[in-house]
Amino acid sequence: MDIKEIQSLIKFVAKSGASEVKLETEDIKITIRTGVSGSGNETTYVQQIPVAQPAMAPVAQTPAAAEAPSTAPETTANEPVEESNYITIKSPIIGTFYRKPSPDKPVFVEVGSTISKGDVLCVIEAMKLFNDIESEVSGKIVKVLVEDSSPVEFDQPLFLVDPS
Image (cartoon, rainbow, N blue to C red; front, side, top):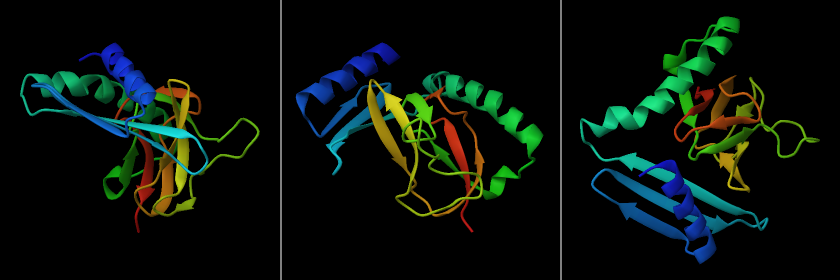
C-alpha cells in the first residue's frame, strides 16, 4: 500500500464520520482513529505496522531510517548528547511539523522544558488538519530533532526526553 492509497483512505474515514477503522493485509496493518476534541478540532491518527516478513520490513523502514540521520548529525555537531539514556518521541503521522500553535504564538516546548504526560509538544498538519501531538512520557526535553515547518514521516524521531 503506497502513500496515496493511505491518504485517500484517511480522507474517506474523515468524511465517513467513523471513529476508528482497521485495515489488515498480508503486508501491513493500518489503524486510523479520528475523534473530536473539546476545542472542536478533528484529530486523525494513523498507525501503520509492517507485518513480520523479512523481505518487507527493511523496505518499509528504509525511508524513515535514511531521513532521521540526515537531521541528527546537524544538531549533534552543535551539542553532543548521549542518546541511549533518553526516550525518543516519534511522529504518529505523516505531515508538516510545527513547534508553535500559530505564527504569532510562542513554541510549545524548548530544550530544557519540563513536560508531563499529556502536554502538547508540537502540531503536525496532515491534509489541512492540525493534530496536537501530546507527550506520552514525563521528563525534560533534551533535543528537538526536527526544524519548524519541516515535513515529517511516520515514526520519525521528533524529540529526545530525559525521563529522570
